[in-house]
Image (cartoon, rainbow, N blue to C red):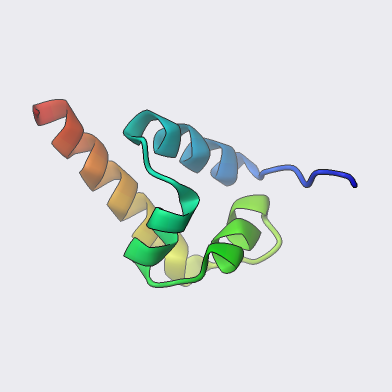
Length: 69
């Protein structure tokens, strides 16, 4: 089975998640969507504009908190 590729946005988010030690499932819960829908957004199969802003806010806020600790 062919593995689907992440979009550029998805790659950036995944790199941040790895750095922050957060799973996609945890991120989906934090932004109020399902892991499946988050996966669609990260692969570029859904626009997910409503969630993209929440994703960026969450990973950037979490990243800033990590830097201060």
